[in-house]
Image 1 (tube, rainbow, N blue to C red):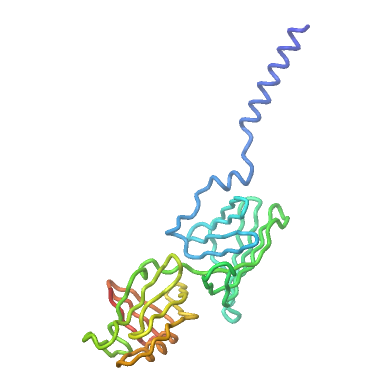
Image 2: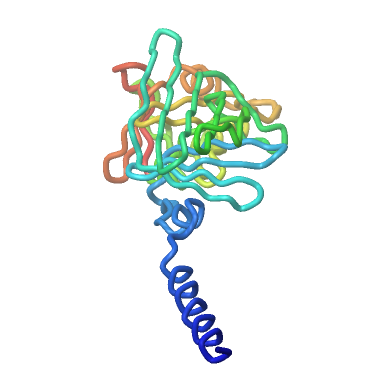
Length: 253
């Protein structure tokens, strides 16, 4: 009788072990094991602090991460847009998760860095119909990688820039990692944030040094034009900045 009991127990243990080994991982684990977005593919970052969280959006994948290391991935789907109110809304589904991101155009800063963002964002994450994460943050499009580096101004409003040394060489230098730009107007230095979305570009909150400009220069015209710029094109070693359809500045590397 004792042998039968022991044999029955052993068979039960093997059965339970077999069931355990074939059990599917939790939804979280399955999500984490999926491919995450490569930094080179990400074109939009949405983030918040207190607590920290971020969402990376690439052409084929959207990745949510929270401060505790939770990772949930979604297949990319284009947002709905309301151009009149300058808003975009993403609605993404993955397993038992439901992610909604609402973006409205407007200056946004996280309060902990000097990075400026072009959008304010609200996000809500549901798991099996229950809200598990709901916060406000900022969103910005990453700079085009080909903007990186120093660009020398060659034309301003179709006028050639003097190369005789009568004034400092005007230039822009982009840091695509920090979404920052610095440079020289032909007299004073400039620095500030730069915002791009596709081929659109803005230079908000530019600061200049306050050195007195004694010699002839193009500073005033440079500063006026940079505020008008709305679009850029890169072809080879040329960077062209436009105000609408009008070419305003031509740079070369």
